[in-house]
Length: 105
Image 1: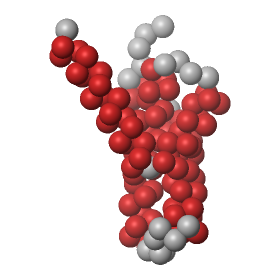
Image 2: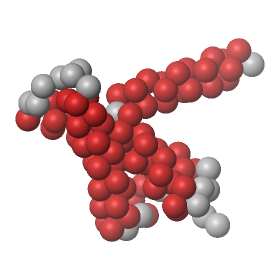
Image 3: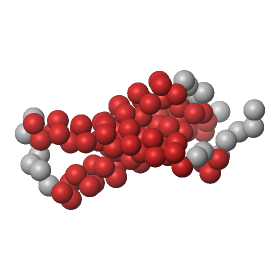
């Protein structure tokens, strides 16, 4: 099977990916408000949604690369959208460790 590139996925696929990751981001933001970590702010909500959407797309690409089942991918996309910037930090640490292993060889 030929490798897919980001432009080979349909628009409906990206709508689902963004939708699931944004729902995760909204859930994460509501949790922050309920636990007292922040007060409602439209600009902060928009920031959370942008981060959640970005992380969701990255997670989608990683799941596709690992050839995961679509339902499992959807779960990971939602969870990473909920995690937001914490997921980016995890991805950063993973990339750093892989890069360090590659450079040491």
